Image 1 (cartoon, rainbow, N blue to C red):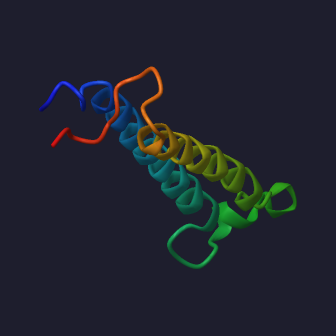
Image 2 (image 1 turned 45 degrees about the horizontal axis):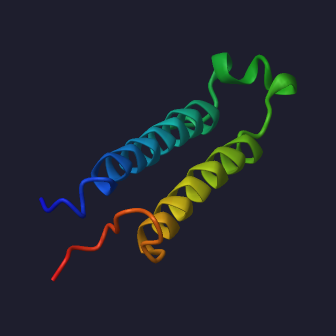
Image 3 (image 1 turned 30 degrees about the horizontal axis):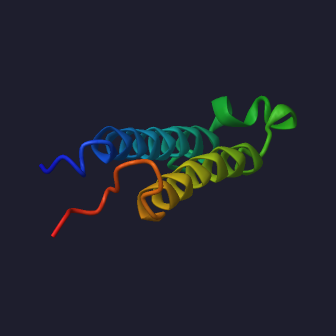
Length: 89
């Protein structure tokens, strides 16, 4: 790893971790909300209290996407006072 890439390495790791956490959060919540089979007695008891999880998941996905875009923008902007993420020739 060159010295020019050092500032981006931790940021890339954090971005990957945030995206994995968001994907796991989505998977867990969607499986809990929709399940993997027909609605049995235990699932239908509180149907009047059921809420659609998609709006909350959309907000979390949007936040993760914004973090990803900020990371891409930070690594692709010109090096004005900071080291670039692009390898030096």
